[in-house]
Amino acid sequence: MYDAETIAIVGTAASTLFAFLMFLYKKLVKPTMKFMEDYEDTKQSIKIIKAEVTPNGGSSIKDTINNLKHTCSSIERYQKVLDQRSKASLHYHKYALFEIDSHGRMIWFNEKLKSFLLHKGFGNVQGFDWISIIDEEYREEFVKEFTSCVAMCRKIDVQTTSANGGKIHFVGYPYRVSEEDHEGFLIHLYEEEN
Image: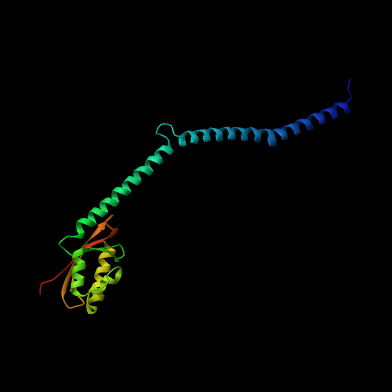
C-alpha cells in the first residue's frame, strides 16, 4: 500500500496543516469570535443608552435633563424676584443699611445710608472705598476686626470714630451658607450718641 516514506510525508503534512489551522484558529478565528461577542455587547449597550436618551413619555435621561433645565430656570427667576423684593423692602428702611460681598466690598446701600453719607460729606463709598468713612487713626484697628469677622463668618459689632469725628457703630450679620462659609453681610451703620 503506502510505504513508510509516504506515510511520514503525509503525517508531517497533516501535522503541519493541523498546526497551521490551530495557529489560524488561535490568531484569527478566536479573536474574531471574541470581537464579534464584544461587538454584540457594544451594540446592546448602545441600544440601552439610546433608549435612555430618547424621549419616551417623561422617564428618559433626556426628558429628566430638560425638566431639570426648566426647574433651574424657574428657581433662578424666582430667586431674582426674591432678591429684588428684599432690596426694595430694605431700600426705604428707617435704618442705614449696606451690603458687602464675601470679600468685604460694598455692593449695595439703601436710601438712609446714602442720606447719612451725603449729610456727613462722604462721597463715593462703593467697593472698598466705604472704609474711608472711618477716621484714619482708627482705620487699621477697624479693618483688622472687620477682616476677622468676614474670615470667621461671625457677627460684626464694632464701634469706632468716623472721619469727621463722630462715634459710629457697625452691626452686621453674615449671609451664611454654612458655619464656615458666607456670601456677604448686611450691615447696619448708625451714629452713637455722645
